[in-house]
Image (cartoon, rainbow, N blue to C red; front, side, top):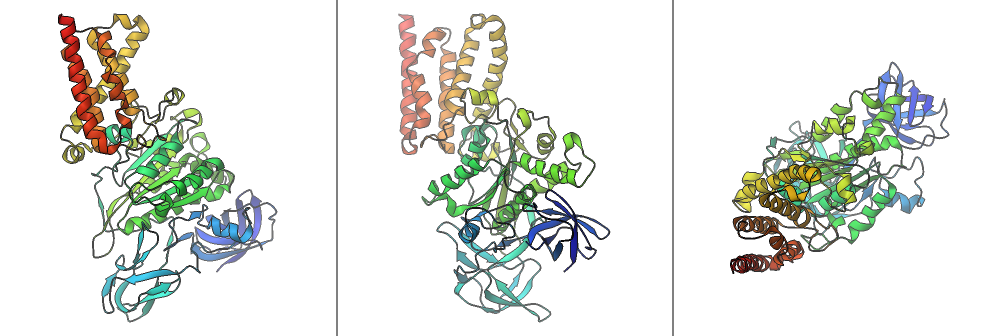
Length: 586
């Protein structure tokens, strides 16, 4: 423990003297109100502390006490379904204790010490275990079984273990190390948030994380264990895209970090998620979700910590062998918190006032994602996929946060204000977005061997449309040849019937891969059959075929009827084209 006194207060930054024995990133308690803070710079016996609570009223001479340990999170039963602030304080428990307004200096443990959990051992007395081995399970919710693991750097023989109901701090097993010392194992372990949790081996990202969002799965897929960025201006639908991914992505656990976003957006999440049914189990989505709420009116320093708290919790579930999706909304607000603290520390500013280490901090965060083989003898495979929203001012992605993010991530879903104004959602621009994960082999093997071929054709039609649009703007539609006009019609069908997706329609909000393939097939079949018969038919007649409406409505067909509808639409398409040919011939 190291005690000092406040020398200077500058907003969330407090400078304390007499802190020679303290270490970087130690958690400290500031003033008699015991506000929580973290040491971020040390000069001699002076420590600069970022305080995670409101510092109004603090003055020089007040005491500062170091806890001697870094900012850590508590990991164990009770995480799922909880709502924490940026430093893992449980907001529901705080509200029950102090009312609806957060009071300063509140000390409430992150995981409830009263709640009892039923522990079922999976090893017996005498078993040799090492770090990462599962010693038992706790059923946390109807969906999530929490696996209790041997903490890092521990190895030995189990000398006592028993089934029963325990709190997170009760001893559930005793481990005898090689040097004959004994360690009590509990349901809970602590981990410093700025340090990535270890694993045995990182695997290559070669399986997609299916999201049910057509433009993502088909054109710009993200791998399990992959990283993606969603930059876009205000009102372009970043939050709705992240909500859709949280609801539908192929992930066992969702960690949602509301980092510096508006309070009403976080309120939407808090109100919506408990009401939503998890499509796989029919239970509430909250039964597999951890929420971290650090809205724009909460202390700015805690915003910086919230990203690390969220990814540490996500790594904990990854280590159990789960597939975890982490949503950070938004990393721009996190970078602004870095910029504010850097300014108060009087560091040399980089581009646009952001600190020079912005890119390396972003890289440290995103590098913690991945598909891994966890510690432990059973070789569990877990995945942590990180999806960060970026809110560039004015939608200008040439600013430092967007550029630093693009250098790190492999998937870029570029949200476009023009598409959003035209009510085309998700407003992901297909001409400027990209995915560097090559998932073609997987889709060809698991959905249909023509998947990559159809995807390539769709992208070519969309690119051709962009080029033809320039000609149309200059000389008008009449200057185009019939094949080019047909190409424009096919591209319009791809945009409006395939890429446009209604997040609030029960049948369109999620599209499985089989249905996605059939939709691609129908749009391209119309184009191919029309192109074959274009010499005999007028383009105006082809555009007005009744079957086009049916192709457009295919996205609203229920899953159990898609095969039947697909066959009927194909039959109708061929029949109508044949009738047109006969009519023209006559």
